[in-house]
View 1 (cartoon, rainbow, N blue to C red):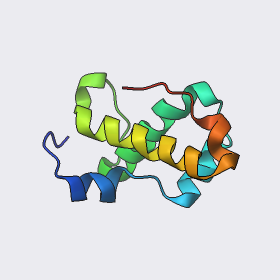
View 2: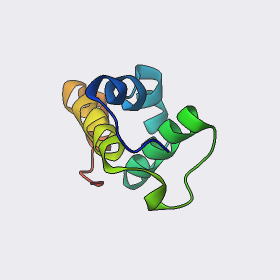
View 3: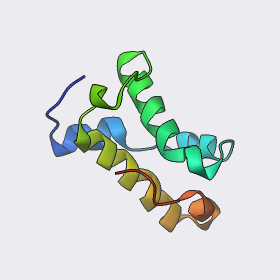
View 4: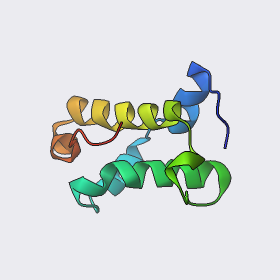
Length: 86
């Protein structure tokens, strides 16, 4: 897994799209952070993470900010932002 990301790469790869946000509706709020990280990692490299050390901090932080920002912009997702994650 890539360890150094620039801002544009983080936004392009680790931001959630509308259809991905809709997937969160099918998951308990306590699982959202893990679900988002596994989804984005799978899209990027075609496999799920085995360990926390398989991914660097910038993508984790970007994923967290992405779904938390979406929940603030769209009230239907507000109940899905739990504040968990890095």
